[in-house]
Image (tube, rainbow, N blue to C red):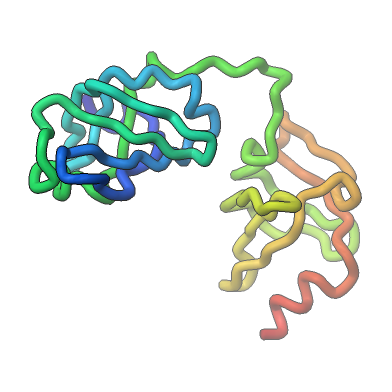
Length: 175
């Protein structure tokens, strides 16, 4: 299997204990719906299958797992920071009406005052709100995604129209 036949779900963040247990960190939103019987780790630019013996999911985008034949910390240590993938067939289906802020990555941002700003490259979930990032004039510009600023979203054209607070974009560009 190669990367175009798979999807990224996260990485191994650390080992735990001496018996080969590892902590998984999920960057895939619906990680609780994943079938984790086999996880593919990227090792030397190849996807290598690891068979999961046991996995315990937690609420904070993490899980603890044991892999077959990994029974000591010395065998688990080389897996730390390896990216995890699953085959595309195992991707959970989402309801088409289930729109999330992370779906806005790749959308063109148009501000009612400033005009076209650029494409959303990243969406981060913060404790109080979601933050979008665009690259503008070789600088990262960040702004909150909330209902007060969003004028409209056009999924067909992949455009989001905003009315950002006056001076927000200028603040980034003046640095």
